[in-house]
Every structure is written in structure tokens, then in C-alpha cells.
Length: 168
Image (cartoon, rainbow, N blue to C red; front, side, top):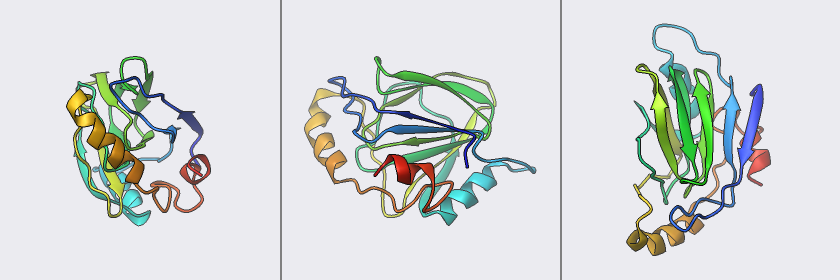
């Protein structure tokens, strides 16, 4: 299990809807090794029903997804991230950390090391969209968020992971 789990319920700030489901941050959740540590996250996520993996960083502006939950596994470097819009929480994430972002929760990179990299994925059957907190996208986004199903399991620990406990 993750050494430490932080759960944050983030309120709608009028621009970013956020979610009733808590944002979850798992510290030192996955031990990484080898020449390609990102593969460890890709395999773990896929084995637990989270698909569509990608490798990249995190955008330096507030955005959220209204059609999918998202998991991020840090495989290189570290970054200071803000969740929930301007009044939200700030978390510094490092190699081995995992962040599970419910649909509707804003996220933004406030600064990272030059080598920062994450593996991202989404629960099976979910595909992401991009929302920026613009007033014209809000009605559609709110409806989408209400329809997003909870995942069948935790992206790291499967059917018995912290997500299952925190998202019931």
C-alpha cells in the first residue's frame, strides 16, 4: 500500500467545478527501477483497468476533464502542482507518487524540474476532454461530470486500494 495517502475534497470555485469525490495523492506508492521506469506505471495501471496511457508533463494552466477520471504516476523529477483552481491545494509530487484526479477537478503545473515526467491513464471505457474553466463550457461540463462512472478499481492497488475506500 501507499506509504501515505492524502485526500482532498475540493469545492466548486465558480470556474472549476471540482468534485464530491476526493483528489487522492499516494506518496511513494510505486517503487521504480530499470532503464524505463515509466513502464512500471504503464503495466500497473493497465493491469488494474486503467487505459490509454501516455507520457508527458502537466500543463502550466488550469484545466480539467469532464468526461473521465485521470491517474498520474510520477516517473521522473518533481513538480509543484495546484489542484482545484486558484483557491485549491498545492502538492509537491516526486518519483513514485501517484495522483488520482476525479472528473471535474482542475490541475496545473506551477513549476517542475527539467526532467519531470508522468504516466497518465483513464479508467477503462473513459476518454478525456479538455475544459479550461470558461463560462460557456460549464453547463455541458457539469452534465458530463455527473455521468462519469466510478472506476472498478484503484489504478495501483486494484479492487482493494485506497481509491475504493475513499470513493464509496
